[in-house]
Length: 297
Image (cartoon, rainbow, N blue to C red; front, side, top):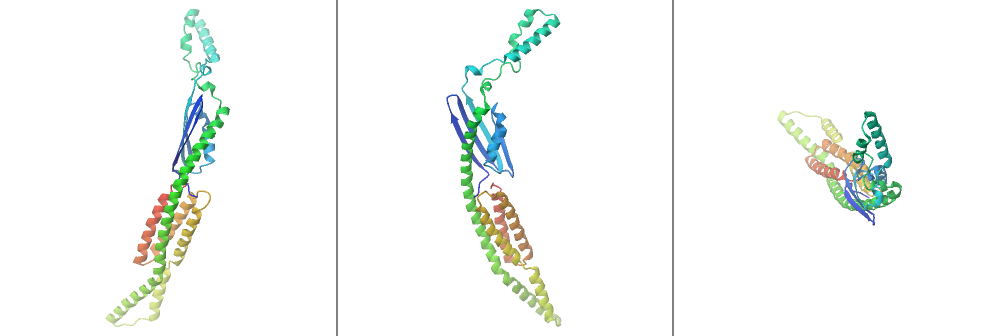
């Protein structure tokens, strides 16, 4: 089953106190990369997000975007008295060392509230990862299910394209196979005609065995039977791999490279214009396959 590496999925959760939305965008990538964008303190759960994504996705760039709105309560607005007391005692000790009046140091209580850690951001103090992560995980799994649905739909469309390209290459290969026996015969006839004309002009004779030897050498040098058989086998294997349970993007990439190699060899060995024309058509179709297979997980 083919899966596209591109897609989109979204899921939501809504309660009286909490609203969550997770968006997933999948892009092409040779390897798996998970990128998480989340507000504090949810960004601390990035590794957990990645673990869940890796259970479903094997290749591609997955962008995870979390939006969160929390209904604030009185408990969300608290002063960190420990931090405030530490600042206050340090300030009074410093004022005493500098000989300042007690009233002067007392007037700095207001600015102390602006120091780091004294007044935490509202909402963060009520966050409990062990309580909220199971909820986040369910929303993430729902978004992944929708993402997978889109990737499967695109994968089915790509499978139809692959089959069309495969059938086109098979048809061109069939034309090459039917043309192969006539190539050596045509070369023999051309060579015989040229030699006969040459002998007539120069009034000399040539050993017939030499002519046969020359034709034999050409036949051996231009024999493409093995390459044609291997390319036909690769086409059958391509179809089989497409039907594997897991999306076989890497296998299809490798097999496409092998088909290119066989097509190039056929083109370089076959000294025939008609066969060369079919090879050009095959390589053009293989290039389309190579571009499309980059989108398969």
